[in-house]
Image 1 (cartoon, rainbow, N blue to C red):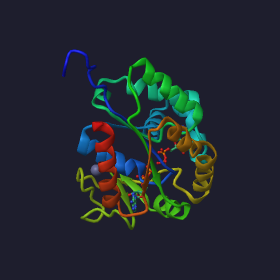
Image 2 (cartoon, rainbow, N blue to C red; image 1 turned 90 degrees about the vertical axis):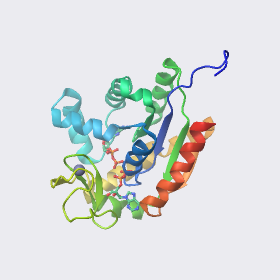
Image 3 (cartoon, rainbow, N blue to C red; image 1 turned 120 degrees about the horizontal axis):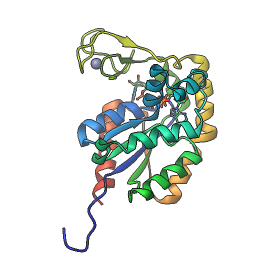
Length: 229
Ligand code: ADP
Ligand code: ADP
Ligand code: ZN
């Protein structure tokens, strides 16, 4: 580094896409490959619900119904988490921002820490695929590894490939009723962020209808290019 250049700031990547697009699956793979930290507001909110915090109590019913939790709650949770030391490795935002208010709050937060968004990557899938993906989704209770009844089956039936755990769980909001509401919330409130980031010049679109590994290969290429230029 020469005397005039600034030290590189930790990469900030955003994964956009409807529920079931594969954000969580891909974020975990990126975390493993690049060492960035996955920040899933869905996971943080589910932890708050399980812990019975005030934020968790306020979020619980909204999440079960498939609505969006209030911006203030989500922004507060994200702000606290992103300030933790491990995030200095770089972060992959999975499921945040989901509204324009959240996107603007993120911009402010990043200005305060002299960081910038390297890429906002939109995983593009059609609505029909999303419903099938959500209906078959389950995760390991031990380590959070994601699985699918048809598309990602553990090598040994009922045993997590990642940690050997045998307790699998399904989410309370992965129901046919809630999926409709979640999809509606996505189109009304989150999809506009695609043009928000396009206008900033950081948007990348990736077709996410193919198999998990194929999407991961494309995504890896995009992330490498975005973080090395
Ligand atoms: P999915 O993986 O299906 O996209 P998430 O795990 O990201 O779902 O989120 C689950 C639920 O948590 C959402 O339906 C919503 O109720 C709430 N949630 C998560 N992130 C946000 C956010 N950024 N803003 C508002 N609500 C959120
Ligand atoms: P999101 O975080 O966007 O809601 P997930 O990563 O949880 O989505 O993926 C939803 C479900 O679909 C999971 O069961 C996952 O195993 C599966 N899945 C993810 N990506 C793909 C893909 N490219 N093809 C088929 N199934 C996928
Ligand atoms: Zn596991």
